[in-house]
Image (cartoon, rainbow, N blue to C red; front, side):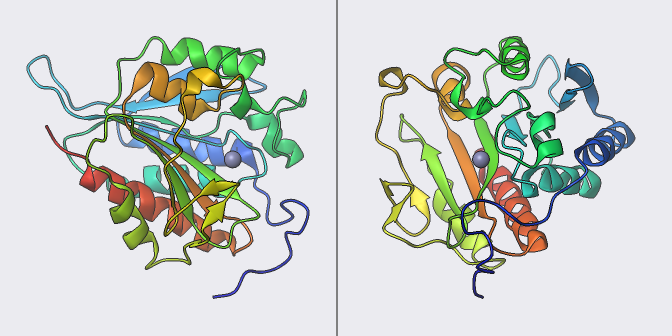
Length: 260
Ligand SMILES: [Zn+2]
């Protein structure tokens, strides 16, 4: 499969009605017995959707999934909606899901929020209302066993991912790539976004504390988890393929996560 070749200086593909997609997410969550929290009120509504199986005597692995932090990456919120509609989550997991962290960005079909903040650069020193609310909400949650952040990249030649795994826990990266490769091309470039990559896997060797601008994943790995994946669908391919890739990646990660 070839790239479409139409996303040259930025993303110029399909857009989504983010309010409709978020409404679909919330309706599906309600149908399937999830708890729904409003992290930020309208007109920039951000939801935290939670489905917990743990009881006082049990501890299920805790999974956090977020997406929609960049308003020109529609496959992420669509994948969140698909996962909620399908409701085929592996059993025995506690799940937290934020289906859209940047609603005003989607209205404008651009990466930043309405005020021009790249929300995925301000988790060290939040300024935007969305990030302030999201961080405050995260700080009320317990630590997670696995975090997945769903993104898209219009420059990529296929799907790829970043792994943050400072304790060298068993990696889920190869399993995710192998499964996604059945659904769409993998970017097997040796350098992606200026970082060494191998078979679609980037393992950045860096200390977040040396970085002034934190993406969400740096906040998560510093404060909330010891294992984080940023999943990048390639937005120069058809939208249904990208959604399928992200859904397959999430499902594979959730099946592979150790059940304690
Ligand atoms: Zn992104």
